[in-house]
Length: 148
Image 1 (tube, rainbow, N blue to C red):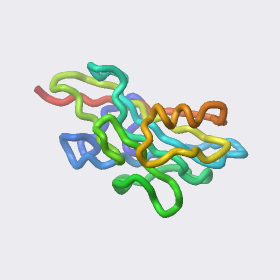
Image 2: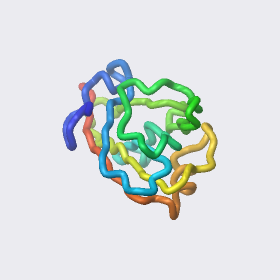
Image 3: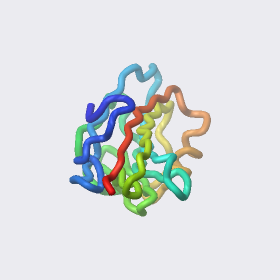
């Protein structure tokens, strides 16, 4: 795990570092889980919730992600990355205005099916596609503050 609940997110996972996606791990996915989805978001952004990452259709047996998930909308296993608030089909790390401390939630969803969306989908599209199909969910919250 890249950081603990409530801890500061290491710089390597932010716009001030290498902007790599963090290692994540989860347990307890319920029986019947067909796919996993992940949404990373900043609810403290000045313009409202800012989406940093949208992942969908990860295989149901997935128990985590390694550091540095490659950029790109679709992967050979059928999973994909939607478009974040930066307009990218990839992870884009924390980058709050200088001097502000923001919270970042990495939300993981266990689903009873794959979702029928494309790589150009947003977090809103993913949330709509997940409605009625979430078996369990969890989150990891970290914080980040840029100097200034």
